[in-house]
Image 1 (cartoon, helix red, strand yellow):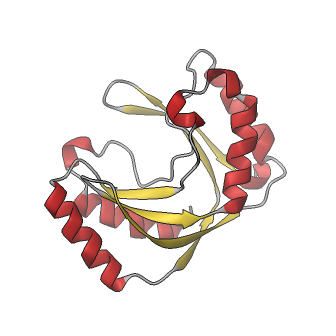
Image 2 (tube, rainbow, N blue to C red):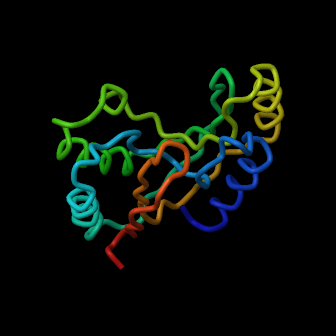
Image 3 (cartoon, rainbow, N blue to C red):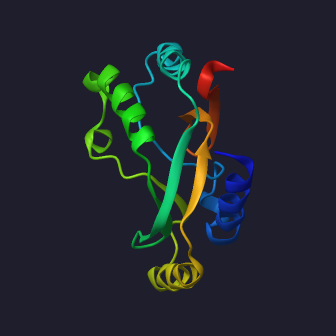
Length: 159
């Protein structure tokens, strides 16, 4: 996402996400678990799909209570179409979670006490005004049982 939006979400994440669980920077997840059999093929698919695409507009529409956390919600039809194209390529290997409807969000708090999360959502909602974020590319990560390993950075337009 654009730098200003990233820093906005990252600041909230650093403040409200339990440090011992905060392994990766602020992000909007497209897929939770892709087959790790051939990360090179996944990277090639992502690069191919993004090569001719312009950055996407993500409209922040509100906040969602996650039970033990809070996330900003987005209306992002262009991103949804992109995700749909990738999901079609990987349909045979998607997990049940990744076959569900896409509900774009950026989590700024998770694994917190439920009441603490509820209070944060109320505080953030009191100041919330819709805003626009520009999606500038995709990142590919591999989960290593706690830490994560970055596998690629794929900008829109292939630049």
